[in-house]
Length: 158
Image 1 (cartoon, rainbow, N blue to C red):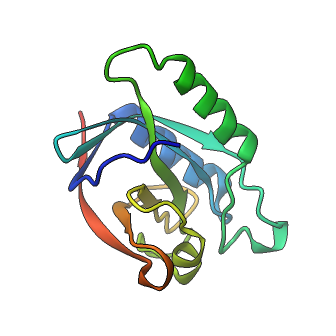
Image 2 (spheres, rainbow, N blue to C red; image 1 turned 180 degrees about the vertical axis):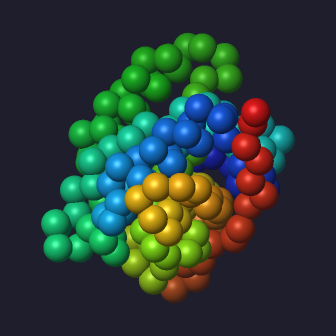
């Protein structure tokens, strides 16, 4: 998978933001997850589509961990490759998941499971099954023991 360059801002289409919030509420109190698809230009990652995926982590761990269904990942990658002839084609920019009743900050499990430097991680933190769903965006940095995240500016398109 081609890794995008490192953005400093994440711009998310309103429709994609609504999909993420709906998934966080639907899966509450378990973590939801999915892919962020869009374009990267001039330090700005623009999410045009949020693709929900099943959380296939062991059932007993889904309140604290997520694992994206690999079938969804492969299907999205294949579809994006088929559109490779298009100029400025979309790419997988990263992932989204939720922290039900938690903070929209990377957890120890997120740090341990993040393997793609340069990828965006968007975290939704619904405090309840209904209502507002706070979001924060993070950029995965480094390999091995230097695994860490840097916050990204987050803009929601109207």
